[in-house]
Image 1 (tube, helix red, strand yellow):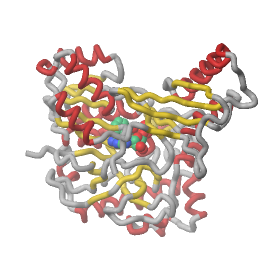
Image 2 (cartoon, helix red, strand yellow):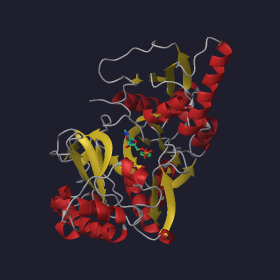
Image 3 (tube, helix red, strand yellow):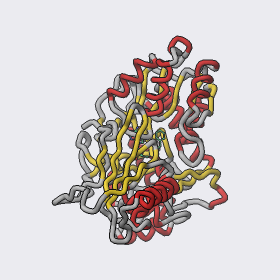
Image 4 (cartoon, helix red, strand yellow):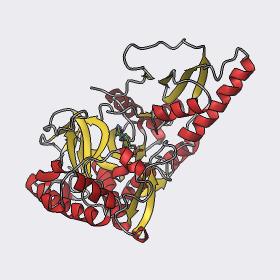
Length: 435
Ligand code: DLL
């Protein structure tokens, strides 16, 4: 038996979904044209007016928006409503200086909660469940999103936030959590602790909703075995609201995109050409129900495939594959979004060179990041104490810029292998993406 949170919407006919999208897109385009100077300018530059957009068929006429645009518009440049109408702000993790901030009206929050409630119900959730949310609470959208969804569908919510594994396990057993929401790497860690501490018989978990970073099918099976649960994927990004843009159902073969709120396109990341369903490319989202922070044709940089094959769960909304990589160089380390350019800036500010390498690995369930950087004419020494002091300074600067701990090793000039083509800055040994 399938359960849905909003059955009529989740199983609507393709024609009905298209009709919602047509109407809401037109409304959103007028909304941003009337309220956001940035959009008006961009559309004028592209020679488009709101009248040119009669429905989804005209979407391709609109210009793309990128993360750089969002940074340039920080903080209020893309706000489409009076600030007084907003009730919440969230922000992306790990970016320095001009972070991306997203605004929400109460209605935006209500609709976002609906999306997360759909995900929880698709993972088997009912009012009888106890949902343990151990995504971070705060500026990150993970905690707030799943918390909101859990409230909305009427489950008992344990707002744990991340960390403090002993307490997580205590509440998990004492309060009989049945659904676990966290990053897949934390789920793996919790699963290992459950096995090591012999708690498997004492937990009541039946499913987990894991996302915010890439994870493999092997990880899924490992977590499912260790915890005796079904593990479901969930996708989203701060710019487009947060978790719940797409979620997995009982079929576990990709995530249904909430198409009544978001129009998805796949484009060739180099040319920007729109690709047909089934082809791999960069995901682009247009939000069509948001009041405070609607984004038109936002380039996610996530590489994925869309499919409209009939799904055994009965849901009719298009499915996206797990993200298969990124079209930029963003890394997600310990759940934090990291751009190599941020690391480079810290190294240069410390008088080092741009001959560096970032090595990302995963031991057990914990990500590690090591930065090797060559000495420079500005900083050259053979004194161990000076070297260690410099490394410490860089570690501390990186901690404040990225929010995570990184190992730093200053190495001799010319000891990092030179490349004949593009410099190989990042070595990611985790192999998280499956292609
Ligand atoms: O990670 C929102 C989220 C919270 C999603 C909790 C799911 C669960 P950001 O911090 O803005 O937002 O990071 C967004 O994370 O563009 C993807 O590259 C990556 N990502 C998110 N979900 C998945 C997933 C949240 N299920 C960026 N699989 C996105 C792979 C994911 N990558």
